[in-house]
Length: 214
Image (tube, rainbow, N blue to C red):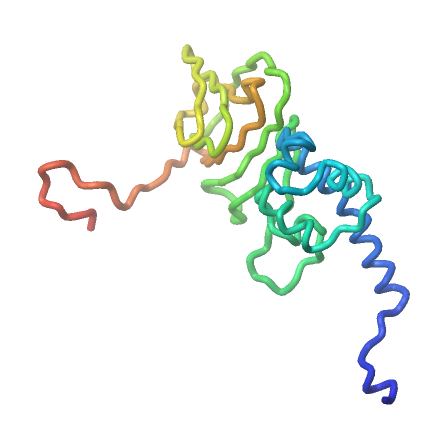
C-alpha cells in the first residue's frame, strides 16, 4: 500500500489540539457540576458512574470516553460538544456562550439585538442572600424549570416552584434569587423597553363557540 492509499496521518499539531481538548474536559465537568449544586455522590446516582471514576475524570486522571460522557451530558442537560469544548462547525444554529454574573450562569436563547430577550438561568445551591430590590425600565417573565426561586416584588415575597411563572413590570422594586435550599433553573424573558409578548392564540372560554383565535 502506498503512502497515498493509507490516508491522512495526524501530525503533531493535530495531536496537540486533541490533547488540549481532552485536558479541558475535567475542569469543564467540575464547573458544570458545581454550577448545578450537585455532589459527586448525587451525580453518581444519576449516571451510574462510580464516585471514584467521576472524581478521576474531573481531576484529569481518567481519560474521557464516549461511554462516560454521554450519561454525563444527559445528566447536565447539555450537548455533548459542550462537554468537550468542540470547535464550532457549519451548524447554522450558533450557540451563544454562557454569561456568568453574580454567581448565576445565563444561557442566551435569542440573538437579535433589542426587543424581547430570552435566557435560561442556573443558580447553584448557595446560602440565601438578602434581597436587594431594584427598579429599571422593562417587563419580565419568569418560569421555573427546576428547584425553587424566591421573588420579592413590591410588598410581595413569594417562592415559585417548578412549573410556576410570574410576570411583572420592572419599574416595580423587585429581586429574585436562590432560596438557599438548592440549585434552581428558570427561564427569563425580558423586554428592555417595556415590550410585552403578543399572544396570538388563547384557549376558548367554556361555553364559547369552540373557535380559536383567527
